[in-house]
Length: 273
Image (tube, rainbow, N blue to C red):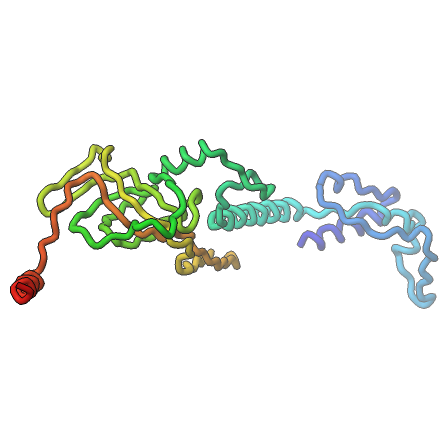
């Protein structure tokens, strides 16, 4: 409809003595028609007569102007709407991007932490690095009937001696490091229970870092109806595997020996006598 109205307006102005296009210059969208001044004039068929070409006021140079369409506003609105949709799509895409720890801005340069900063960050998470595990260390012990509830970051775990847990990646420790988990919320055994407010300052849980691993992949699929928008992304959370070696801060009851083994020892003693 807009093109038809423009063609009607153009033919009306061509029939006038002084064709002008000033009323149409108020609109914004401009499409330029090529200039025909340097080209040869079109020779019409001598048998046919064209009233537009025979008009003395007609010249091909009058076409060297800008054509304006009234549908500019709708196009701009649609373009602005598409831009907003693209911005929303970009925002949605950035929601599931992995945040690299220690990366400064978007330059990709990793932040260098000092020893004090590492200790403060680790203490805020809930652990402290002691050192590397040596071959001469005998940290792994038999099972003891004691449990503890510890907090690492925003997660809580109930652990006993010899248990293995997976936590979010501890970025300031390496494999085979000995660490102390100092955020102990509760200690318990068969005879007593100790509850912190919120933590027990004298309690500690010792552990060894066994490995840094990745969790199973989680598929994130997003779709918007009637927008031709589909996004499928995968994410694997970084984890740290810890082996609990000792729980300190509570009296550990003695493990009673089984009756069969005690009777066998008595028999061996009598035979030897």
